[in-house]
Amino acid sequence: MQRVVEFFKSQGSGLLMLFGIGTFLAILGPYNTSGLGWPWVWVYWTGLIGFGGLCGDGIVYVLNRVAPDLSKGVVYALVAVLVSFPVAAAVITIQGVFGPLPPAYVWPMIYGFVLVISAGVSGLTYLLERPGRAPDAAMPGRALTDKLPVKYRTAGILALQSEDHYLRVHTDRGDALILMRLSDAMAAVENLEGAQTHRSWWVARAAIDHAEKSGGRAELTLSNGIQAPVSRGFYPDLRDKGWI
Image 1 (spheres, helix red, strand yellow):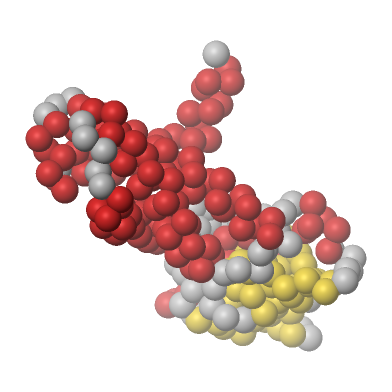
Image 2 (tube, one colour; image 1 turned 180 degrees about the vertical axis):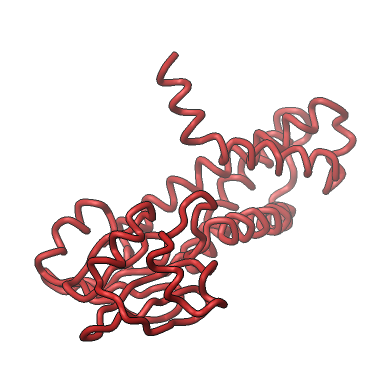
């Protein structure tokens, strides 16, 4: 029972999104699926969305293994294209089981219909999980934010960069240079998911777009386009965390 509770705590938002999209499509009834009637049209769409989600997770896992340097935007685009193949095959199979099998010349059209839905789901997922989105409850401490210009005080923190006695704070609205030590700033963002990557850098996990590796060193490209170095001393810990 405890494992079930933990599963729903960790996967709850994903399941709600799955049922939400499936319900929306069932109500909309695209591609003449409204003729299935309730609750079968709902079972049909939530089942397909769930199957597509499982396939998408597998594709993401493989892409992260074979091409870890791909940006998240490219990964989501590839997932939309690739996941449409097994989902289209499922649609064809379902039609064949409950009615006449669609002729082969119709299959590319079915793939196209599925791709439209897959692209929409992938795009929505990317927007919800895009780099730079910080959890609503996770906010940096006022020891840091009070030193920032007003327009940056509620912005998402992407990275902290030490410059002599000053600190450059990179946010999703721009950057600002303030008088503060990196160690003090890191203490102010301890409730954010992030890590020190270099003696002069701290980076938020959500801000990472992709990593470029070379030997025992790496460079992190962030969502705002800047590149944060990873020194040899911090490389093993970040590698173990799955950052690089």
